[in-house]
Image 1 (cartoon, one colour):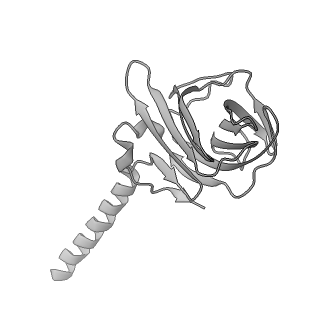
Image 2: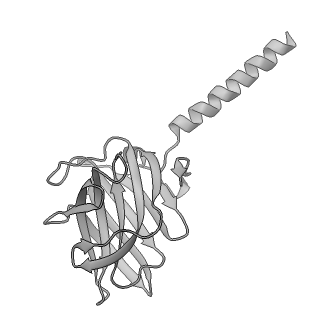
Length: 192
């Protein structure tokens, strides 16, 4: 009888632990160089707000957030932030049809809400519809990998050299679930 109670408790504990992992929300990411958090503003149209920070964003550089399940760096939607030698920050949206190729959109399909650079420290907030937007009708309503790309150097305005350093993949982000205080969310799906 005692063994049965212990077994039942152990199985219940394991199942409850699994349930917590399934229900957990991933609404932020941080590493040594970058930090990002996201939140959906509910209303008639759900708007996704993305706050991005780069702690060493020097002149003539770019950094990016990309969304998609690949394979690899293929078929990704991206938001690219660049800093020119005149210290201006430019925001682009783009698509990677294949590795090492970036097709920049004619118009950025995000709105810059605020942007600041203090030394080499970039803080920027952008918004976009959670649902379909842009020429490819890209939506973030479903769960998808988010890829944080530390960046590389600029070739020229709107043209980007290969990224330097490893990328960070935040697996299976369900942005639509991030509707509460994002500062209290716990990152559970990070891989290196």
